[in-house]
Image (cartoon, rainbow, N blue to C red):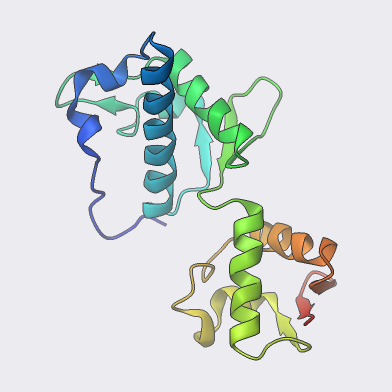
Length: 176
């Protein structure tokens, strides 16, 4: 599902050296961090969860046609590995050809969902997964429309913390 508004690119996106991984360690660290932020914001804005490296190389995310610059594959991989270390990327395969981009980590999703349950009086009650992601009471929540597999990962995190219990594949009970 694509977002309806135009993505606002950061200033670096129009700066040609941004597309060349820098050699100076301090500059490179800041550059990789800026790329990480861009990848997460782009995926969040467009509600994208999957990234195929081969497709990404030619996508607007890593290729700015206006300035005729592309981040090389090695740079893309370095950015994705940095995001992996932070918990924002999970590789789908050992050859690292595709991955899931978590613009929020599983732990962050778990915290957001639990905060909602707490503030809405949903503790010690059962909610269906459909209610959480498709219900009328969550339309303004960031997890509204979240894919079921990602919701279940977040709820499993809450379950491991003793804050929730999954009920089959259809529901969850939140604990105080």
